Length: 426
Image (cartoon, rainbow, N blue to C red):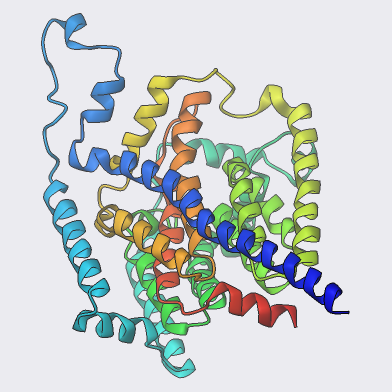
């Protein structure tokens, strides 16, 4: 009996270091590629012309003159460097055990009541409605609006089986026109729902209502979100469907592939988010068997998408043009230009990335998942413009706004992964 007990203990001893070693390696494996891509993306914030100049085929030896100074600093270079140095100083003070450590712990441990949360949500929604409701009575001026309106006039539900288009988007716009008599009504409602879902998703993974309110505020302050919150041309139905699929993973995982699949027919770009979903599921607090079943269900989605691609590949939007290295590197530079009025995201993206890394090392649930979300969104635009005829559009960065906001909420979380996994397995 003792020998058997001893052999069992020995096997556990050899297995535990492997688990601990894996838990230490994974945060680094996620952080290193994410920080590299974040640094490349914000390079244009410090030196706006550097990436474009470095990747452009038109060098000074061709033009016989130096047209652009690649090291001319941008207007946000000083605030970016200053704030990052400040955050670095706070981090050093925190690890030295000064008073700021207690202050940060108080902020991280702060929570509000359910009543206060409801009041906060109402205030945020009232502000959003006050800022955007006036646009509902105006005709859109976006370049793609005329083509969207023209296609909507001939679109019908039967088109679902005829072509690979954003049919869900057209379905919602058609409903908006026929039910409310305003094509912008449902996009407006969708944006309200996105704010609410951001709150509930953040609360679900952090178990803190204050974190949910902070995430809502960060989405609301985003110029890119407000600018496209009532547009029919670039509605938010795709991102809300995708976020809802992640929310269901935590609440009731069985139907979670359905909204993900639906999001693809609102915007095909969400196909690129599939690896992010798989990682989120693998790192969720679901029991091991449920994770396997959930991942397998997404395998069915992959099969369906592969079949759809085989059928509709000749008429897919964008078209495969082969990989263009120039377009790929210039795709990184577009983020700063597209988010040029979103100062909070541009300036704090790097500090939040680093803080999420430290949170993941502490074992905070889904800190590493938020890093993967940020990494995935930042890589989407460069690859999209590098391999297709599509151009970068600002509205695609609404997803970055949402995941950045949720990531900040996660920094306020005290949910340790091991504790959550133990409790969920009981």
